[in-house]
Amino acid sequence: MKNRIITISREFGSGGRTIGKKTAENLGIPCYDSELIQKIVQESGFTESYVKNADESASSGFLGAAFSSRTFGPTNEDYLWSIQQKVILDLAEKGPCVIVGRCADYILRDKAGCLTAFIHASLEYRAERIVNVYGEREESPEQRIREKDKRRAAYHRFYTNMKWGYAKNYHISLDSGVLGIEKCVELLQALY
Image 1 (cartoon, rainbow, N blue to C red):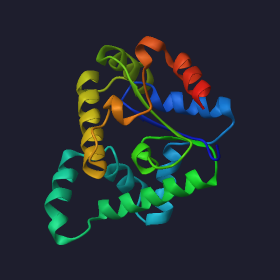
Image 2 (image 1 turned 60 degrees about the vertical axis):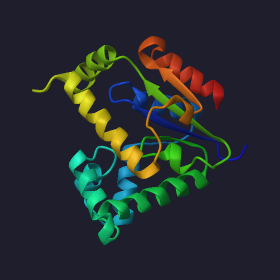
Image 3 (image 1 turned 180 degrees about the vertical axis):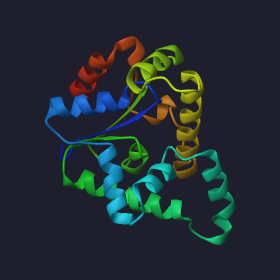
Image 4 (image 1 turned 180 degrees about the horizontal axis):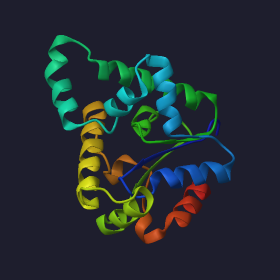
């Protein structure tokens, strides 16, 4: 198949970003994660911090504002969503790649040769991992995970009308806490 794409949706702390980058590296194809933000910034004209705060990490306040302002026309977040769709579709057209997050699973749902994966793990595994990767914070790691996952789920639901993390919405769902990062990479490579 032409232009094989892997999209990775993930729970916060599950290692999805790492799995995506390692899979892409092993396959010799690009991985788009934070690079996606840069492309959206270039296309939209908004600042990087604005784009970061308005995307899948958006607070529930953003979503409430977006819901209520719908009756008055498109919001800045709607504009960013359309830019995000364009950027992801353009990257998919350019050639094989791995795309992490940003609802790429939904945006590319009708593309042939697109494998959609969801990476998850137990709360305990993710809490330990985010402390090791991102360091200690004032709030508990469990609280950070719950808040981040809640915002990702709300953003995904708002723009896709699909349940984030629901196994039937993905081709494969992998538990990185049980399988390990390297085995997840191995499995995705085998399915590529």
